[in-house]
Length: 254
Image 1 (spheres, one colour):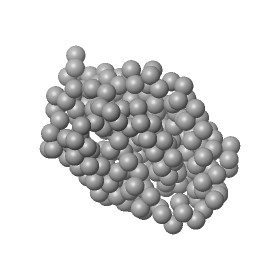
Image 2: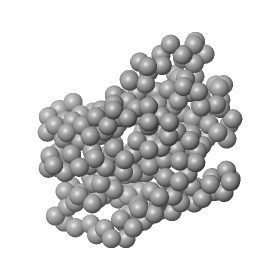
Image 3: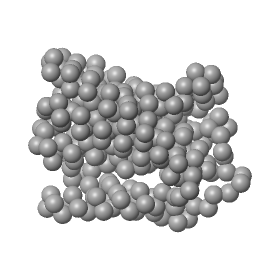
Image 4: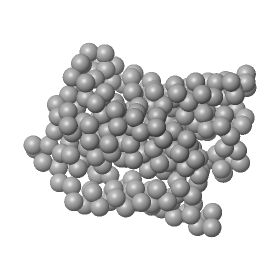
């Protein structure tokens, strides 16, 4: 993998990480298009550049993250299901990283998104503050997040759907999804780097730095645009996008 490929993957990671369209899926598919082999080192690269996206959330939500104990209580509770299952099923999860799985889950997730949105009606009594999410609902949002361990499902997509079904308004569901990414992605990234740090050479670290920086910049842009979009529209366009991309890749692979 060269510098250009690292830049492209960093941009793609930043733009898609917090959209409900599966950043991991897009990275896998983009790597396949650019003929980048899915080695253990490359898989670790794809996970590691997510740190840039995490910092984007920390940068945008620093006031809440560094001052709200109530928020962290909910984030830790929501992280527990994914943390436990991710540790126990690490090898199984890694074996699922393939374009076929990604394409299929993009389609399935897109259909679910459209159905949920058609049934969802935002109401005044829906939860509108991430610090007011009941603990039990935070836990079940974490359960939804654990489904995203299957590549192509989308961590943000799963948590947003969970939030909508559990009575959060769209903006709050999206923001809690962003914030939950901080402990979830930090632990996942740190664990992957720890397991594969010996596989990185000097060139790998240079590529990682490029991917990290571009992911940060484009994640900041993506989050702001996403919140502006959902303040006026719903999530159905993302469901349609998922289905179209999934079908194109399934036909292409077949």
